[in-house]
Every structure is written in C-alpha cells, then in structure tokens.
Amino acid sequence: MRLLLFTGKGGVGKTTLAAATAARLARDGVKTLIVSTDPAHSLGDALGLALGDEPVEAEPGLFAGHIETRGLVDQAWRTLREHLRTLLAGAGLDELDAEELTVLPGIEELLALTEVARIARAGPWATVIVDCGPTAETLRLLALPEALAGYLERLFPAHRRAVRGLLGTLAGGSLDKWDAVASGLGDLAGRLEGLRTLLVDREVTGVRLVLTPERVVAAETRRTITALTLQGIAVDALLVNRLVPDPGEDRGVAADWLRIRRAEQQAVLDQVQRETTVPVWTAGHRAGEPVGAPALLAVADDLYGDRDPLRRAPDRPLLSVRRPDTADGEYVLTIALPLTAEDRLDLARAGDELVVTVDGRRRLIALPSVLRRCVVTGAGADDDGVTVRFRPDPALWMR
Image 1 (cartoon, rainbow, N blue to C red):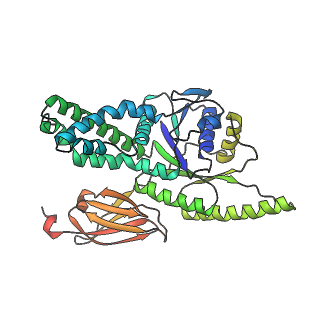
Image 2: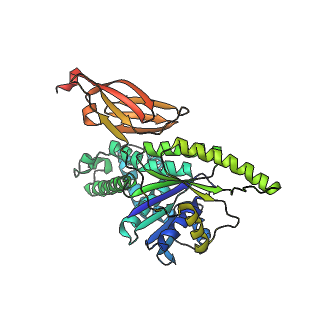
Image 3: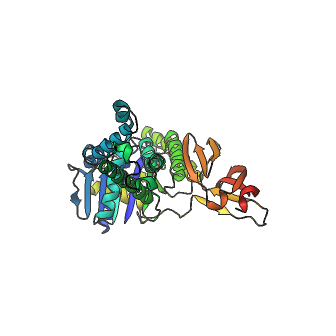
C-alpha cells in the first residue's frame, strides 16, 4: 500500500494534481482512494461530483471522500478529554484550569490524519492519496504526532500507565477511574506511535509538494523540504504546475507576453532543479479549468508522461554515524538536511538528545547510544547536511 500526501502553498493547484494523480492510477488499474483533509474542501469540485465522509466510486477503481473532523472530535476525543479532566482535577488543579489544559490545539486535524491512517491500513485500496491543507498547516499537522507523543510520555510515562492503581489517587482514589484514564491514554499513545511510524516509512509514505514557478512559492517550497526532512518524512517529488507554453517564433503582443513569462518561469524552474535532489515534474498551464476525470487524466499525462506516479523517494536515512579510524578519534554524526546559505541553523545538546532548529522549526533528535557517552567537539554544515563531531567522554566511556 502507498500513501501520498499532496500539499503546497494555497492556490497552486494541489487539489487538481492530487485528483489527476488518483485518476491516472485508477486508469492504470490501481485501486485508489483520494480523501481531503483540507477544511476548505474542493476535491468534489475537481472531480465534478458531491462528496461526503463515506467514500464513493467516482470512476472505475477510483474512490473519493472527505474526512469530516467534527464527528471525529465528538467520537474519539470527548471521552478521553473527560478522563484527562478528572485526572488533572484530582492532581489539585481547579476545574477551570483542568478544562483549559484538555483543549488541544490541532486536535481536529490530528484526528483527521489518524483517520486517514486507519483507512489506509484497513481499506482495500492499493494507494491512498490525501489532499492536505496548505503548506503551513500541513507542516504543523505532520509534526503533531511526535510532539504530542513526547508530551504524553513526559506527563504520563508508559511504565506508570501500565501499573494498575499506581496513580489512582490522582483520579480521585478510584481504581476504576484510573483504569479508564490509563486505557484512554494508552490508546492515544498507540495511535500516535502508529501514525508516526506510518509517516516516516519511506516504503509507504511520500509527500508531493505542488508549486508554481514563482520565486516566492519556490522559496517556501525549499523551506518545506527542509522542515519535512527534519521530521524524517520523505518528499518524493516536486510538482511544478502552470508552466505557460513557449510561443516559439510567433510574434505579437500575446506571444511577447508568453515569451517573457515563460523565461521568468524557466529561471525559477532551473533554480529549483539546481537546489534539490528531489525529482521535479512539470505540468503546463491549461486554458480551461480541469474538472472531471477526462480533463484530470490529460493533466496527469502531461505531468507524469511515461513515468510511474508511484515512484518512491531515494532511501537516505536522516541520521548516519561515521566511526573514528583510531581509538582516540572522533565520531561524526551527519543529519541529512538540505540547507542553503540563507537557512538559520541552531544546534544544542540536551542530555541524550540533540536539539536542531532550522528557520524556527525545532526537533529533538535522540542520539544514537554510542554518542550518549561522548561530548560534542564541533559542528558544521555542507552539501551532505549538518555534521556534528563527538569525542568519547573519559568519565563515561568505560562505564
């Protein structure tokens, strides 16, 4: 099964290219589901039919639907929120504070992504395509599973949740209440871990970034690649949309306009291709709005040609460690982040974790076990990414 997430700056045509990809796969005999998690649902408009939260067959082998987040919140979050409020109130917080702490920003989007993961694993489809929201919202969404799982583990560690009654007094002294809380927290932790595992599995999940050949959009796309790579999520293609045709030797006002516009777009496209190792595929600007399967298939054929739409990203791990050549040498940790001179990079060590911040986006990366007994001696950045040098700490190395 493959899971493809489509996102991009608002207005670049991500829904159209997601729907076109789904139509192409279905035509090629791949049973495909396309769903929208974008609050501003426009997938039905692209396909030319009304969609709801239950997938319908739009074309032979092509199913489509919306993820309705309001119902998911009512079903999946309300009970757990009540459990958490009971637990926090029992720990000494007043009712108002407990209420505020159980309001989780982004819970609707997170539950939508969890529902996508459930559908992807349980359904009969060979490929699930997700029409996500715009880039900024998608980046926050994809970072949520790991961040929330980390907070959950710090507040309610797994070993404490597993011991019946250990924190029963925090739930008002009732073992039944604590069992319900522990079960709910354990279920949430399991969902988050499963979602995180699915997102970083390069054999299954890939992100398609849609952009138009404009400098502002290209700059945002480059930052998005870095942010997703930092999260360990694979970007397997850049889809450049709305490339205007080359007028050739034609003359006239319209031809001159097209020539100037195409030259501007080509300059941006050339820069995008120079700055990334991710495959870059293009789709031309069409005179008519592509609505319905035939029009979408024409877009897909232009975009992919004879290439496989399910092509995977090159398998490059986020972290790699080079061992020293001598006993007293240094270890070198490489973090495979695509960086440019404009990126603002900050590194810090916090215990057994490395805190990596790029342009304000931060991730805590657990150090490989061999490096936890080392001290940092230096760091740098090059074409391979970020490199951090470590030397064994004599006070810890022999323990």
